[in-house]
Image (cartoon, rainbow, N blue to C red; front, top):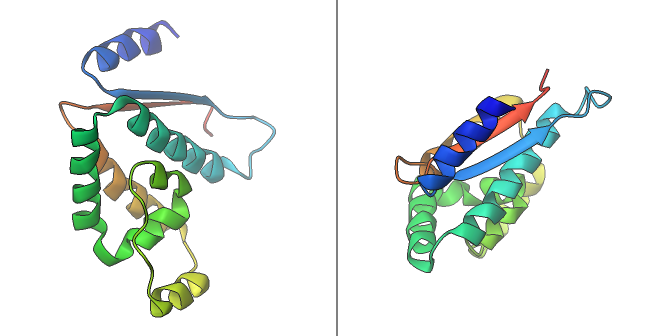
Length: 133
């Protein structure tokens, strides 16, 4: 707890984003859903703490990184709309989106790509996930 508080102060001084989450020991079959919920909370925190110019930069970078896969990110993290309104989907994207199955590997890859965009030396991200097993 002392370590987390110490790191939290440093990250916040660097204008970073800090999220903590304690996992429910009784809900062992749903840890991935809880991790995704933390990333959704990160979207809201970014919206709350970022300037309009910083948000525009994040949106531009997200669009560059995700391009046509932005709908995958939006399905995984619905709170992304707080940062970036979703572009209109084509009929083909809607059909393929309904059929798409997100595997653990694709979820991890999508979250990694998202983190590369929203975290930087000037805006570090610290996720403290307690009791994740």
